[in-house]
Image (cartoon, rainbow, N blue to C red; front, side, top):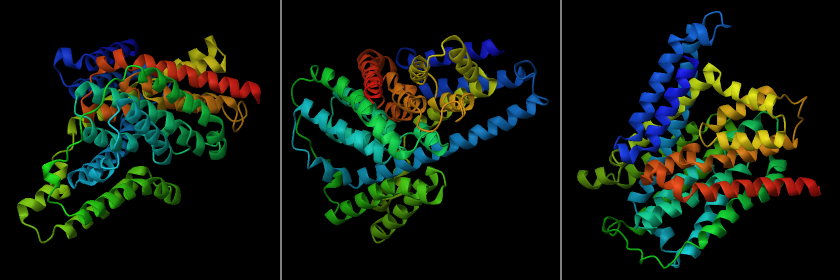
Length: 431
């Protein structure tokens, strides 16, 4: 069953990658893969988890534990997507797009990537990617241009999240666990993360030719008063910016912060539209917006994260970490490989495995092992589109093809990833 689980996971992963040729939605493949691997795990639990006294009970408890963690991510995603969609339906992004005057593709790409890079550090890479996906839909209409910009936004979001203690879930884990301090992670990883973005940005700029068409405002936003647009935009963006503050202050998970912002904006929009006709109110209320949320993307998230968690419970990921430690031993190569592997499976269990393998007596606080791990786990996921939360979110929202990303973005993401590692090596050699 141990190896059969790997086979089914690879098979499911292949079906996700070949979504367009197979004409089967990736969410269906991900959910089926998740159910099968968990079923195989509980059927073979007596063999796979033979060292445990009651392996069946452990599998059941582990499933509920991981489902709880995944649900937090899903509710966060649902809340953030609803907030962004609500701002969009009220024409809030028109305020932003009206400030963007350049139609030069290369110049616009640089502007959007740097905005994403710093916004991701202030918020987190998932929230930022959702906001930028909505903005890209307003700015760019040609599919291939849209996907190319979106691919670079994924790189920028993950690079920006890596150098901030709140920018990516793995850096949050290392920060809370005491492996790194906030000031040190910013100091040591800013330049490597910047190079991770700059190198592919320079290279891909040579592919950008021509100009975009002028941005046309949608008719549905023309009848919305300017004060309504601004009110909803400020409350929506403010709610997203408040999430890291809420988490730091209350120590509650981020989805609680996003639900707080969502409930406040819900009340605000109800008050704004309370005297309008029911049909118009339904269009601009959260009840109406929820119908537009991309539910298959949320189910895809559920499926892929559940499938990976089954491998974590069965010991596949911890076995991988032990093999890396035993066969390689070199922390530079280990962390580099963890980053590559995080583009295939979720980076959270890989980082959790590394934390479990090495305590602070082996590698003390702010050791270069933890710093490099934060960089590699944070940016390595960009190599494949489903290797990071930012990639999965944008893939669902903008319907990006896995194979297209593999052909057009993966090379640049890998070059950027290696450039960041070399920059980190150079900085540590000098210091």
